[in-house]
Length: 358
Image (cartoon, rainbow, N blue to C red; front, side):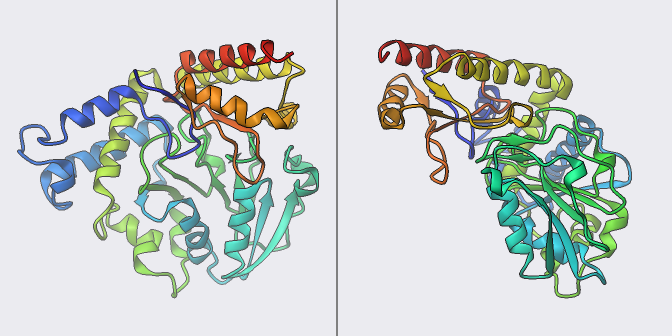
């Protein structure tokens, strides 16, 4: 029996995707080759690549004036590629800092430009989100950067403002869990290993007019315009990771698309949050309106029992629930591939653990 995997990433994949990948491992569609062995220039891989691009464009309703880029380097790589691709003649960028990952983004950008913190919730322990009215943008930023879901701190923006400057959004932990309005964004980026694939693939969706702003020092393999002009095959792309993402995209379409998935993900999150809120034994420190649907950090009121809780969870095949080292406690990531039955099993265990100790 497979375990229920609550990892924040690399994370659970749909069982159907794993089964299909396994069945095609040695021989993809009668070619006598694994996808891992194919030339990225060959027609076999080209068909995989084009299908993945088309399915993703359909799922996210990507407007025609946006380019989809398959890249490498992870979300942290994009933290450097963003200023290198967007500064143009400007020297400052604005950052909204709401947790560990947006803080890392701002710190990396300081290597290439001045950064202005337009809003932060650090003084509140990153347990809430700043209202848009609190954002204090600088006079002439090249862009404004936001992390729309903080994987470690468990806060999520469900709406973002329309700005006069490009809005750059790190959507790594929630992308494809619900519909998004890409017309508000100049750039959206995400690493695959949270919600739509495996480590090694990074997605950037860039509005076409922003492809002209790269600094001359930006390496060619990380220049968005170069990647766009070559349909994400300027050099050897992460072919197997793209293949697996393509299988996930098809699986998402079979589930009814992002609107249907949002309903399912909301049901899972509500079940877990309601269990926490109904108990004096567990606590979630995040302000209710800011709670992430994807990443749910929680603690025992008596922290001394944390290891006992995690040990019992592992015995029940409820895996990777340990919270990030910077915040402690527990964390359950409820990505698309985590079924409702897994969350129900976790809730049942939480209630059982509490009853045995009160």
